[in-house]
Image 1: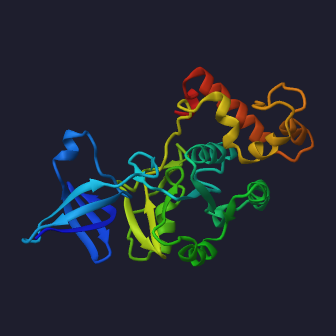
Image 2: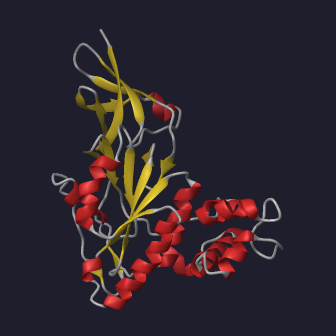
Image 3: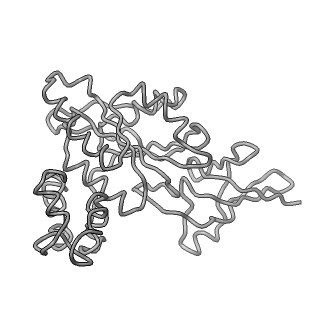
Length: 298
């Protein structure tokens, strides 16, 4: 008699898939039909497995996906915990905007965590960073700069069956944070290259860890984000405060460049919208229009 069950892929090891089911974790192989269809189950996938009388299990079906994010990818991501460092590598508003715009495009909510704040000896620099992050909090993003507070809060933030994934540049401290949140995760951490001002990839594969009522994934750091698949006239919709303000623009579909009666430009002139956010918007428009990433970001 063949038994069927549904679950979530939480890990991939040497061709085997670890699937979290209601009865526990089942290690299984995927049927050859996936190769024929040129499909591949990935971590985060909701799947169907079959177990025969001998206890042999097979992954036989991938259920519909919500999304697929990253390389290596995580499927069905509900929320991103974006780790951005204060120092080593240095804090960058430009990089923060790139991440937030990318995930807005993917329709995934983001919580921001400022790591390594305690390593920044210059208090004026830290104050400036916190002042900049206060703007992002004002436009709707949850922001944490205290790891103890975040570690205490996150099990309650991850709702039933939700998948959260960490993101951020290499060396920002994602694995260090995960080790605090999930003490049995034992993720490797790496030293920072002072010369390059960036970390080495220490996470080699994607794995989901049970946290709260859902899962949290640690992933290899993003070295770059490609916006070229985004349509240039849709980019403004992925800046949350631009999209909100655009309802008051004189022209529908306003691109917030030189159009008269633009609410975004009015708020920019009044200092309500950050100049750096607008500058990054223009930079991304150029990147999309030219169809390639700027050399300094590669």
